[in-house]
Length: 221
Image (cartoon, rainbow, N blue to C red; front, side, top):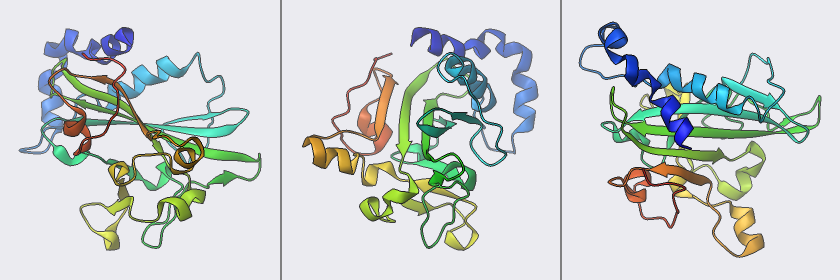
């Protein structure tokens, strides 16, 4: 984990070489995440030993792999601590979800019929401070497959800022139902759809999710 954090913060060592040019790219009065593009490079390197077969499909997440059991989509999302829109939810585009509801039609299939493999979608979410080595939270969120609609319903999805009529993306609100519903029934215990890999000592689970959940962080940083 320490190597991963160091990789995410490698941009800070050369901050003075890119800071002014990066700030020019943001619209007036808005701070963009300076980890947005770089985090994808770090996780691409991180996953290379684990997933041997990336997939070249044009419809899917930036990181997409084929295994013997599934087609895996991994989306990297970075959120600044100053924008609380990350609390308990994560933004997803049509190419990043297979969950089909009346108001939103995704582009991913729940099942890739050509190869008989299910779609698995994960989001790695990083909450951090602007142009700083301070990472407040690093967590993994498992997005429900579209075939689970009858178990999770449509309340776990929220429209973006433009409302459903203009929705090109959605918000997956994992805080609405933070558990694997079927696994919870089978094993009679709470198994979360979110795993917190690292959490700053001054940043709580409630700060991240918006409510108290008994999630144990992998590491306090």
